[in-house]
Length: 497
Picture 1 (cartoon, rainbow, N blue to C red):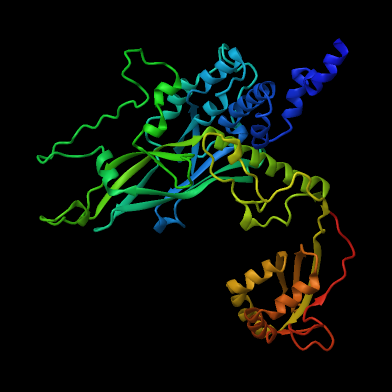
Picture 2 (picture 1 turned 60 degrees about the vertical axis):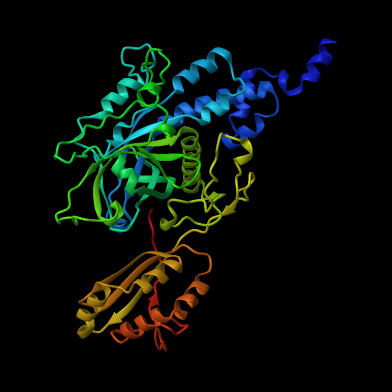
């Protein structure tokens, strides 16, 4: 009878340690669907997701970068770095899960957690990336720093505050701030940024009325400054003492009027602003029908960036998958996905996947993974072909040749990249009147790409200009558009990597 009972239990006959290791192989999106199976699986999934949230709140060795500014300064706005301040109510939730196990409602509570970061202009030291729990740095140890102490330490003296100018012209009701946040990871030795994962990309609409209401430098009619005090929206009038946890320090971000949310849906990413009015150098009209008829300008300080912790967890997992795929490409010369080679311009979306749809309440039905497969097809990546070519140059054309190559036409540069050519260099031996070119071809159809190159009208105009400065060493060649080629290709006799 005991044997029949053990057999009927099936998967649940395994100890929880083995079940945890099995479930830990799944992504968080997949675990949410699995959690609906039964109470035991739900409890194990809650424990796994809780552990992942703790790691994601510390960014798992990544650095959070933020670019926020008006559209007019899109190409000049510098990125800023974000220091982690803490995750409100995370410690209370972790303690409750450890005490009572994974109960119904814990997953919804996880979706209501927010992690806060402070934007700063100073770049962090990539060689001293903080770990979630270094050796000995655990609660109860002498070196442990609580979230409250860490948040107070990152507040600083205000000298490193990140500020922006928001201006609204007359007869306009709002302005916009283009906002991009992404996770970056640097090499521990050289500090090179080798992994980028987008967190959000959208706009924040800043209304004229909101700026006026939240401005801290308002003045009465006699010129005296109005003192503005910000209430702690997390404190309720219940007569209870204020908690010392980090949740009471910040309050509920959804109820904070100084937080504006990015228009990506679901209130996943928001920025907390501190507003100060900037005086215009010109006089405003004495009489006007409404406030909207007067142009205004404000200094806004990017005080905090608030990110839903579950949204951050999904992005950290995608960044980890990206690093794993890149490592496989370097070490084994085959990989799948990505389904096509990664180009530098696609760094924010290296897998060619659509961004995950906005989520609300961690509902498993909303976690739809699109354009991906669990068993990708493995294919061999073509090895880059190294090419060397020479051509003779006319002595009197050397100055003109150097001048035109100092400012190559953008259409020509684009066509070179589109034809899978990289690391392209041209060297001049002025004594021998020889031009020596080297390049790498990363595609799989060299003849087809060269045909596309010859079909480009801008490239043909460029060749018409440069061919007159050169003399081909290919017998019978009439120009760069000739199928024989204009540059003479050389044979490789030695290489060392």
